Length: 166
Image (tube, rainbow, N blue to C red; front, side, top):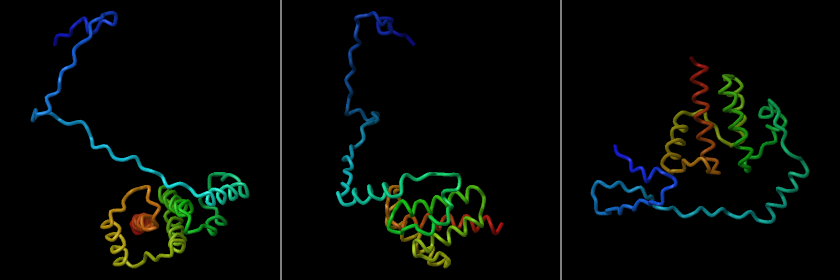
């Protein structure tokens, strides 16, 4: 391989010529991707902002101690309409699963079932829930839909029951 010393030398005034790209070349790999439109976020209403602000001033910031996810007082006050509360319950289930505390995980799943107002005991209904979710195409992590949280809860429950029954 031969390298032109003029190109490598930073003191050189030689500027290499640009090569033209032959767009009709069948071997050319196109590196351009179709640009997607920038996602426009839905603005928060003034009323929602003031309500969130007053909630923060009344309760203050959340202090995350080692067992803050499992605090029974707070778990009993979770609200199904708030995404943060649903996610907190899922996180508590996931954390207990990954800490291999499967009995605690199953207990939290029972609480989550009542929070999400769903029963995940019937295998046939569970399969219907999963297939409906998969066919709807709502697999995005950013979804605020309860459906996705229910399916995640179902997956955690299935894995946890497998571990307990082994």
